[in-house]
Each structure stands twice: as structure tokens, then as C-alpha cells.
Image 1 (tube, rainbow, N blue to C red):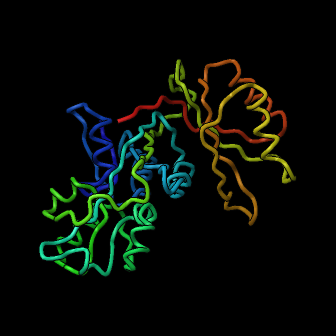
Image 2 (image 1 turned 180 degrees about the vertical axis):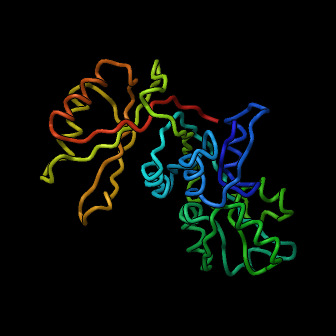
Amino acid sequence: MKVAYLGPHGSFSEEAALRTFTDKDVDWQLCGSILEVLEAVGDRKVDKGIVPIENSIEGTINITADGLLANNLFIESEVIFPVSLKLLVNEGASLETIREVWSISPALAQCKDFIKESRVKTKEFDSTSSAAKALKEQGRTDAGAIASSAAARLFGLKIANDSVQDNGENHTRFLVVGKRRPDVLPFHKRNKVMLLIAPGLDQSGVLSSILNVFSALSINLTWIESRPTKKRLGTYHFFIEAETGMDEAKTGKALTILRAFGHEVQVLGSYDTSRL
């Protein structure tokens, strides 16, 4: 089985992938960006991909949400992974010498307080580990990388600050995605579904009316995210994650009612949750 994740080696995505896919026969493909992971699955270059979708501090990773739709992917499972962000530096550097901090955008966003207090500039990379790798290669002592302790060991960097994230309870939710069509996936006894709902009419209270359907059927919602349709300014569709099995009767009723109201409903996933 071929599995893609965000590299290079030492990334949090790599840690999540290795702890999720424990089969020794996995053929790993490291990608340079989240979008490359999703495209690899969409183009059937790999069987599955694992990508971050949400962080407990910063929220939704929009490039993942949009990429799911652009590549016609299906969510097969989700993994909750604890994240501990460190400030890594080269030998000879210290907190006092750092003038610039490098990392992937979501990681920088999770460390806003540290960055503000330190009064440093930021530079974005495609992953935490690519930032750490570049720091080592350039040998700069006026810059640091926000990454993992695994990246520090891999690239021979020092940990100048053991925890630079805004909140100690930092978790990232990863999705395992595949290209298979939802109608051929086993739905039996899965505890969550992900839906994409495009409102049938642009009218006031449309989101409230959609949510009322789930409330009336006693279906708990665990995630709601609006994203632009990219068709016309001011038009949105909604990602809605519900704690219900796709094979449960109330799930079928919800889909039937929503479609009867004229809303377009697409099932993006049926899956269980694992905590690493």
C-alpha cells in the first residue's frame, strides 16, 4: 500500500503517519505540501494520504478542506495527535540572538503569543521539518525554527525553548483520505460522517434551518465550517461533521429532509476516531 504525507522527515505529519499505519509493507511517499498529498491521492499515485485538517488552537486548515473537494477524496478515518512545538536553533544561537522564526503557517499561528513577545519576524515554509532542515543547512544563528523534538534530533539542532505554543493542550486532527467512491465503502458501525451541504437558496436563516434538522433528530454536530463556493462572491457551502453512523436510520432521515428542502448534500466521509 502506498501512503503519502507531508515531509520532509521529522514532520508532525510523519509522526502521525507512522503511528497510524503500522504495517511494515507501507510504501511511503513524502510530499512537499499538503496540496501535493491530496493531489497524489486524487491522481491515484498513492492509495491513501494523511493530512492535518484542524488544530485545537488555530482551527481549520483551509487548504485541506478545499483540497478534499478539488480532488474528489473520501475521508476514511480521523486521528487526534498531540502536538508540542519547540523553538529549534543552531549551535551558538540563543533566544537573545533570534530575530526571525521559520515554520509552516498553522504552526506560526499556534505560537502568536511567543512571536509577539519576542518581537521577531516570521517566514513561512511548507512544513515544520522543511523549516528545520533549511535552518540547519543555512547555519544561521539569528533565526529559529518552530518544529518538533524529532526534527531537532534528525537535523542536529538545539531546543532553545521547549514549548512556544499558545496553549499546552495542543492537538491536531489528521484525516486519512482515499479516492474510493463512498457508495463502495463499508459504512457499518462507523461513528461519524462528514457532509458538504450547499444551500438550495440564498436566504436569511438558511444555516439555522439546516442545523435545526440535526437538532430535531438528536444528532450531535462536532464540527461546522463554511467555505466559499468559489463560484460567486458571498456564496458558501458548509462542512458539517456529525456523531452518527452512516447506516443509522436518523442519518438517512436527515439527508432526505435536507435534500427535500432543496439543499445539495454530499457525503465526504464515514469514519471512526483514533487518539494517538
